[in-house]
Image (cartoon, rainbow, N blue to C red):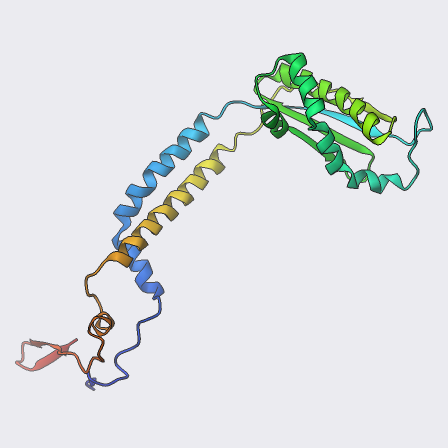
Length: 244
């Protein structure tokens, strides 16, 4: 049964984005995607391979309930301590605390860079908090962490009037560096490079002015297409066969 080529049902509106067309566009332009993605991937590999070793030293502090000097904590302060971690973190990263540490060890980083290396986290369901510091030198990481804990305790006593914060475990020199996550960085660069390449291809397709579909002609001329002239091919028996 032959199709009626001027039938309105034969022509489908193609104004919406066709997922199949997008896939074939990517396949057709795969070389351009590769050429765009390769520099991004190379930069990602270079960054992953040249990352320096970083060492993290950790000290553990406790806010005890012992009735010693100063103001003590009651039984309800366990949950309060967990909520004060943000406050403790800001105190540990305060200008006064960090300035003293920087001056003592003659650190080259500024206050903002030092603050990024400091972390204060709670130990769940306990009165313990962990203070960590990251540095390229494991010995310096140990020394700075212990000094930060000392200055932190002094500052908390001055600001919050709590005198029962003490060190449970001093920081020791870290032996193993932190994971560099090289595989994750390389995978992320591959994904990013592919996305950049695909975006570049789609941008080119949007600017591509060649007519590829009947709907393109309708948009250009501003009129409705009435029909399509089929391609006529003679088979071996001499009969006409229509291929649109």
